[in-house]
Image 1: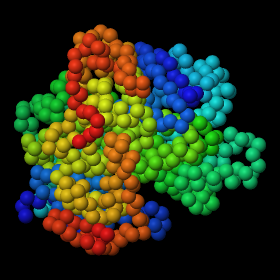
Image 2: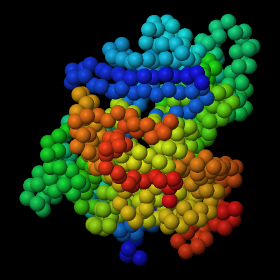
Image 3: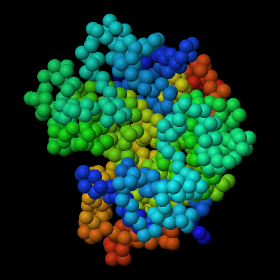
Image 4: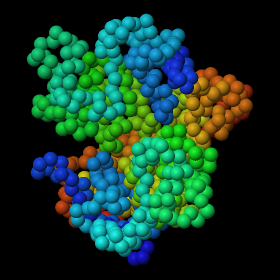
Length: 337
Length: 300
């Protein structure tokens, strides 16, 4: 199967007055057409930087290194900004967190969707553009599109605005969609609808999606595969079922155990001690070692490689080394209570 | 009924939006909070939950209704003047965003001690600094942070400083308006544990305002559901989650994401029919302690 996205040993660093911040460290994964991958992690773990690197949206002073960084078979490291722009429209698109700031308050939503359509196909006749706008609005579930396209963003609810943002992102018929916390600013009832819309679009159009989220519930609803990030590194990668039913990395265990929805109200919540490390420079060994109750002596010296658990499931923890002591995971094991 | 610490009766407030258009932020809301309980108030954005918190704290005077705090009507200026000191010290609020609710140019020690200084409280532990140190330890932070400024602290630490400041006056009621929404999951867990500890070990009473139902279920004793300024359902937490009656509550509960892919995807969304929302329906008790807007009728 050809890959839509190939990332091998990607690192992103920012040089600043406080030293070099290694925001993304040696991340590798790929994405097949029509797949939804959730990128899960806490604030500052590098998930947004990773997305922006793949979109070519990082500031010029960011230092990007990779063995391979390809979108739709084309290596994007060598591309000039002009070609990158073309690729961004044609192949990939992005949905941002806050629909209010992503939209221009002074244009009608119809005009903003039309602008995106024209950017992709500049010579399209006006009638066809209009038809395409209505088609896109229907696709993202905005009914009564004929009247709604004349509205301004402030006249729409948060969920409707996020649908408009998605219509704009889909205007160029991208094969790859980056959605950075698309539901964080929305109410729960609306969040579920937008996630179902993402899946619906993926099934209709075969769009592959990288869904950045800090919410494991969101990943469970929408993702085929889940990548867990910590301190700039990928610590675990697997199918949604691997991650939720058979997690192997102690950080994934901690994330799942600290969720109120999986906990008994009579018991204190599991709280991960300490704080994420600063990445300027990153600590020696495994960045998670200081907060990890399962840390081994080697964790403080040497960062663990990605150990395969199965063909699709990997985790970067020394606990998977054959020489490591056997540990019973505190969570997982088939299904939750 | 001396165990009722806060008694909210028929509270209403509207904000003008544009000429002739007003939004009913609160519409006849009534509930009581008992001493020592964590009362959760959930609602989506625009449901009026922050307006309610502001009314309870006396930051906003409601247009109609009364709020009795320990028998004092905080909506009556004369009574507020007469009991100013009690009202200003005995109720404390913790806001959502600690970046904007803490002065970035004050050290943690001064932030925590400021309410005591402002109210001329003689520090029971000798000095204001000793007081700040005590409160900081109380919320689980090292005294080494006393001389740090808010921007030098993480989000979770800042929220602890805000909680320590609220606790410095030894209040009876803590109003927490979305106190953990801006925090990462692992830090949320620490703050939730702290709230539970404060309630169980020290008997604090909480009005906990949130939009995250999983958090409310974990933390609260009783829950009220607010929608567009109307209290639609109120029940003990387990009962509300086991047996939601109002269609809106059902829709809200069905939307909580579960971190379990097979169950999460098999779960249908329960849509709420906007037209069926009857604002004028009476708020009646269906089983002891369980109130629903529209009563048994509204449950269908």
